Length: 524
Image (cartoon, rainbow, N blue to C red; front, side):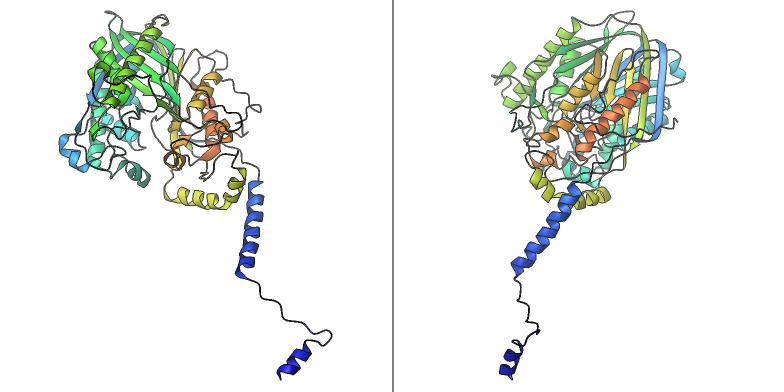
């Protein structure tokens, strides 16, 4: 029987049995299919980034300037310490290195008091969660201040408390959400705004600029091909408001981008406002009765630093806090230098503000964001990246956020709901053809996470700090051009009537350009 079967295989035309393929061969075939699909997907042209405006709110007034400023302590009450932690710390809060504050500056005119006042609020916390601004407006309305329009900015201190961001993403980074602390923050910010509104009086306003020195340090890797790092924006923008009759300083508003991470994990579980709080205190001590608002700028990719030696500076034994004290003195010197070229004080104000709610682009979560030198790895992870993006979009990422622009006389304030790349802030300042441009990150929201300039995606190495920042860059290389388009739209909304175009952006020439339309918004 067996012999006949063997002979049958020799019969002409008879089919011989197929040889059995091994497991490695089948895996190789699967990999080839995976590679082919990945290459095809990577060749699909990049979609244009469109800005879809859902709502728009505008405020504007012109006339004699009225201004008032106030502050309120937002240090967590001691009875909450056992339930809370500092950002980046696992144990409970054990003390206070220095109090943290909410500071408010309210601007208006005699006519606008019956229409709308604008209040800029600086808070010494890590971020502004999406729910905070609406909650603050509701609290102000409850106090009869429903016509006050607020702008929020977080100083981004990494030595501040967590526990006030309710969504899962916020809880992962900042600890268990505590509704009582969130409500406390809202009430105290409302206290500062209310006091500033009650204190408005005739005022004058002036602007100035200075270059900080040895304060902002790049923390990105250099480009492995050119051996160059992105440029650093060291501009310190200053706005000073004085009482018209007495000349005393009502408020300082100053803007610079640098991560306050000097005392991160070194606070012995004590809250601190870090260098933003320290420079504000110095100015307030020098000008009794004044309120100093530090507005955090484009912090992505840079940190604050100072030259050595700073050990035992001003007799402070703790090395990290001694460094913070030196940083505060450095910024104070820069503010005083800026005052020497302050513009002529103006007792009139022409203010225009536009705040828009926009639909966010789809996420682009990725393992290897750089195009060079990781192009091959980027291609190999196209499919996992797509899956991860869909999961992130479904589980945790928001669908909308808010952007804002404000013009005060000839100065422009652009506000972004993210940790904006310092390089991108540097670019934006050069696109706006005005002398004074304030770039505010961490403003009104934090839905975009980290946003890089498009050019930075061509540089090797994402951030020197590794995965903690990389996983927050979840809208990818489209987020930078998206922010530029929004900034261009808002800058044109608030520009002076009859003036030249404020925003000059070389569409079609800049390496970060992705052409796309901007939908016409519906004004509320």
